[in-house]
Image (cartoon, rainbow, N blue to C red; front, side, top):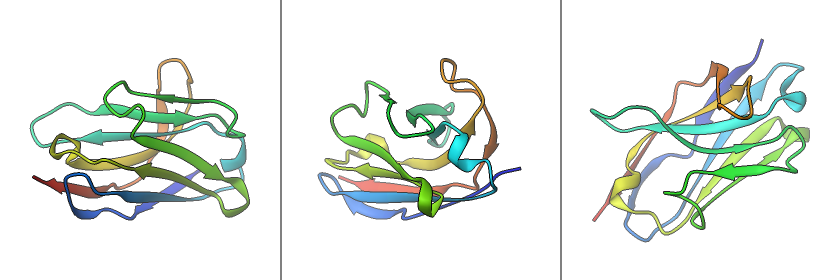
Amino acid sequence: QVQLVESGGGLVQAGGSLRLSCAASGRTFSYRAMGWFRQAPGKEREFVARISWNGGSTYYADSVKGRFTISRDNAKNTVYLQMNSLKPEDTAVYYCAALTNWGTGAYDYRGQGTQVTVSS
């Protein structure tokens, strides 16, 4: 079993930056691909980024490509999402998840989320 706890969200002005962290517990974390998703009020959940178990492969949604960077530190059981050049449309609750399928982004564990609000 994997337990995930996100942190690092907050209120930031457009153009600013935030770094989200996702602390994981469980012995299998180091072998799991991980992903970040977001959900804005009234909208469906949206894939943001994913990273392979060793960090060798990453994939981003077109909407964040070039602005966001996903990384991980398996020694610390932590996944990060560095968000730069933030836009008001990035406002959402951000979740990290342990993936079961790299291609589809399906997951079996998800954290409680952290709120990101970008003001214009």
